[in-house]
Every structure is written in C-alpha cells, then in structure tokens.
Image 1: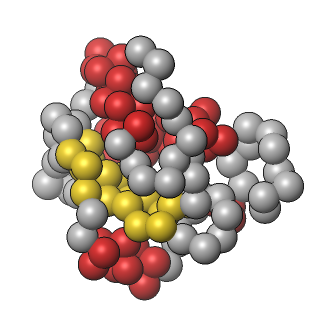
Image 2: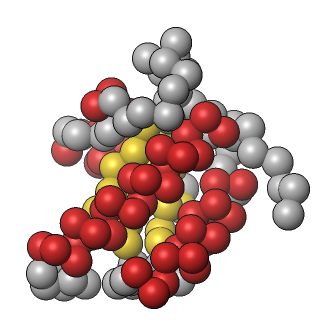
Image 3: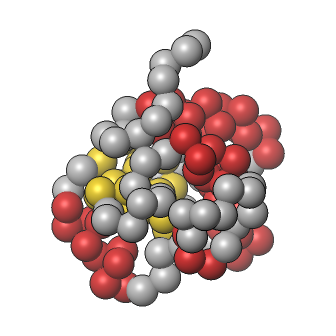
Length: 124
C-alpha cells in the first residue's frame, strides 16, 4: 500500500469494520468545525485510512448522505499523500450541499493541518 503513489482510492484506505471505527472514537481525539468533526488516531501502517459517518437524523434521504460521503472521500483522496499514518473518522455534524462545497473543502484542509504526524505545512 505504501508503494502506491498514485491518486487512486484503493479499498485498503477505508475503515470498514466496526472495531476500527470504535477504536478511533475511543481514542478521544477530535478536531471539529461547522460541518465536520474529525476523530483521529495514529496507526502503524505507514499510510492514512478514512471512514465517514453521516446519520439519518442529519439527512433523511440516502442521496444526500451519499453525496456528503463522496465529497469527504474525494477531499481525502486528493490530500492523502500529505497526511501521515493516521486513522480518521469524519463525522458530518451539519448537512451540506453543493453550495457549501468550498466551505467544506476549506474546513477539511484546515483540519488536516491540525492532525499530528502530518506532512502538511501551513502555507496559506
């Protein structure tokens, strides 16, 4: 997985099991903003992994929940080479649509600069 330098999104970069999500939540480290709450925990894999949680209370329709998950996964995919070895669970805390994309993108990228063990420098 570490040899994969491309910008693809292989399945090994996703948190899939309940135990993986639970361990990140129980580590109790969080960065929060208006739209996103990013729970994080260092891992020993040498690359970052992500999981996304959107509650039905937040967006009743699956179309809206799936859109928010796609946006977060895409932002992760584009920035993953700048993130250290960390497991991330992004919990959507406020519903957003296409009109809020730029705000969500800025919030996500700002949160990545606050992650420990990251390679991102604050250049803005």
